[in-house]
Length: 408
Image (cartoon, rainbow, N blue to C red; front, side, top):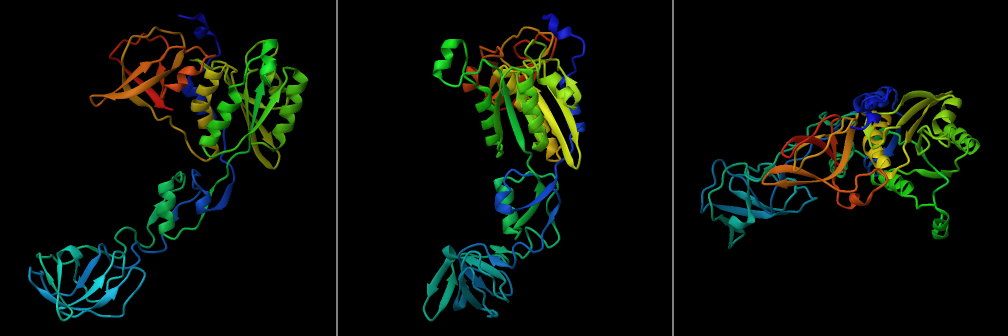
């Protein structure tokens, strides 16, 4: 096993996540139109001011009937007219009377049951006849059967999905109070990053980290500002000092280890940030760095320093950035681990590992297969991977063993 796993000062993944959650305060609250609040987190409970349905209504296209008892096959009713959805009628049905009604229309007073149109035969002289026996209260939607006035519709901290927005809209909610999204700056360090194809001839490489981070936030309905900075202490200090003034989060890639050109951590500390943790016992992504700067009359600025290798950045986004962003939204982020059967043996390592794998069901059992090219500078297996599987330090997992992972 690698000796670097025994390095002093490393904290566990659980400790790092707990420190992010405990040192991060939720952002301010803002009011948005409901249709603009997709994926936002509610800052208050929401209660219904109406009943749903608003009134008793028909569940089918058919006929509202008035009868004192069970409606037998062959029973006839006098047909008075019709009610469309969106209309209401002051008509009051009496025994033996019926009215044509459509799905969602308000049921007239005196209705005892609804007969769907498929079991009705129209006969002469404005009369209808049942072709099946019908119970009372059939195909009737009662007022308030889904939601009653004063009922809690959604709770503080709930994320607004498409379905939640639709349900709240049906209940007449038009405005919601939610936690603000953070203003995020992404700083890509490294003189080796190529701007164009011609730069490749001088030993530079294309940047995967900026598109990775930008699209990760885009997938989560958030925007970021991307900055590239040269590997000099002055350039790093000037940029970070400026960004810390009006950004809630500074997310950096590279420059957090102990190399001659790793300036992110020392510059951050010199700017007055408090180090919350540095170095996590994991692979990839050991030199993870998290710091916080208090600002007068503003919420704190948080800096999360990710390693420079793109696989480490990807893991950092899925595990740590997600935790930070949710904490800023007033959420305690619990990783949603699944259990699965490992399909093959794995070697041991001194650090916990996050391996890119494929998960699939085989005869109702969830199984996972590791992919090749797991080195931290490689990303091509993300074309196939749909999960990150955690392998605990020191373990030598065997085929058939239960392991834990998160879907990506």
